Image (cartoon, rainbow, N blue to C red; front, side):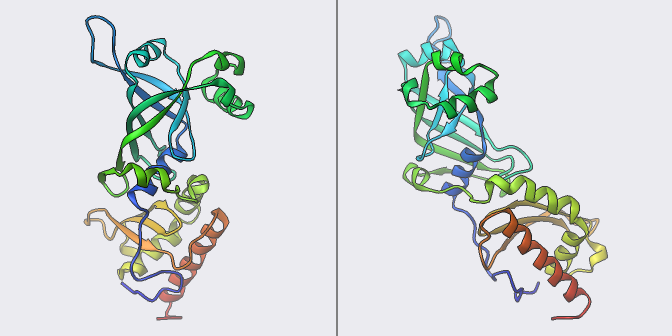
Length: 265
């Protein structure tokens, strides 16, 4: 494997667990609020209810309660958990977070018209109806991340979660991944082969799993009998948006072509 690529570093860096968790929160708009049941005969059981949500600057989910039972449970016990899973094919694909903490009431007066309109699109309820619902915010006391790309999980310190920034490429990640994995698949396979030092025609599979400002995760089967392996590859200069991200990959693909044909070593 060559370490002298023009736009790559020798040692790839990753987002921290806190940044990965904030990325999941940023790309999701729907989750599950779990409260403790207070109804007779089911005391202490978990009640799961749908929750359209946005996160505030500290990563706390804000949601209009969709369940009267959940609202009643929270009146008796404000402890709850919140689960969200990033959509497949985008930033933090398939990764999930669970926030455990206390639920606070939020006045509808603090919810602006733009937010009401967004929630209306998510839920199908009118802005007028949403304005009549009880609103709440879950303030996390524990944060758990399950990273589907790395196949790992971790408890994230709350202080790190609340102060972390999400992946800046998250809004455009789905489009970028789709373009690279479909329109540029032959070039991606060539890059995987040249980067790993195997013949181009031996690569059985290559797929870009994720991309952020620090680098990307590339899954490949180096031959038909080989297992799938995930490589973390680091950018030398962080791309700030989709256009810059595409540009970096085009440069990598061009360099792989030149290496394959002996134009550079």
